[in-house]
Length: 400
Figure (cartoon, rainbow, N blue to C red):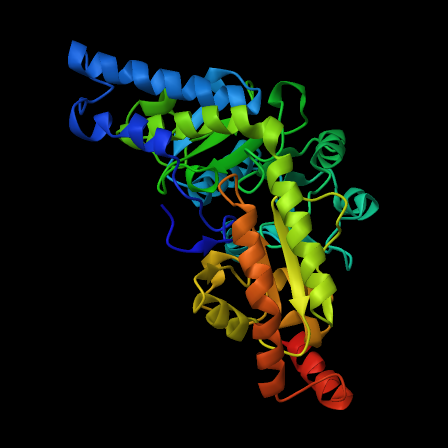
């Protein structure tokens, strides 16, 4: 039972009760090591195999193409480093300005080691330009790495088209699928993607478990070097309870893919109501190609942190961006890359729903939010009349 209206599901999701039920025996009764030769370990190994099959089924992949990891960040690091290790004569990487910190910060680190990185921009709707993607590629490009869908706006990138371009230049293609897996149908058997990352806590599984899809035949050197686990591709004793939980979460996600209209309808209802009842609001990002559960709305002339704190007093949980950068007071790098004006940039809130979100919860948000915004705007030091001040702040923000 939730004690809040939780609209921050792109940060982490509520663990499904069936997932908890599946993992608990492997924390209490079946604690054997799956690598052991004895029967007690063997039964655990069977559970790991089943989970691998469940993850593969959700992705439309083969069981042998799934490597269990600890999280999305590890998966991203493992994929990117493996791609570079497999092509030591190539020193160029292509990514985007709106990636998660797991990719952006690694690329910045690799630049210091002599790699060249092209950071592709997006337009005001958060969309990629495929012509710019193609123009960035050369024969020396080792890897194209980008997200399937943006974690802040929900905008879905044309990954299959990008993957085809990467193939034409002999580059490997890694996709951070953390936000998209379980929300969009996928079929890796008919895809241009070479490697794809996912994380359990974004699809109603526990934190601390993830997986990396590696297409059969793709050269892969392990990021974590150790024992023979994961067919020698990721050393370390398996987190069996987490693995089993991830498998169950993927199985449930696959069964719910046909019902994502639930999230989409509630998202659209929330979005339309906010735009109707609250003036000076805008949707950040295209409304055409995006995740079914996500909307990012800009409330002009107020600070997003004030909105979040005020909503929190009513038991409503949302976000102003990625949970991995929530400790920063800097405006979202995603929204900055989109070139949004300062009046929108600082007052943007992400609402992300799940299959557990109810209409009653959305009605409560619609009931509370207009008064919250009215009160905050009355206290705000700037408004639509402060054009000069806003322009100065905008210039200062872009200069950083």
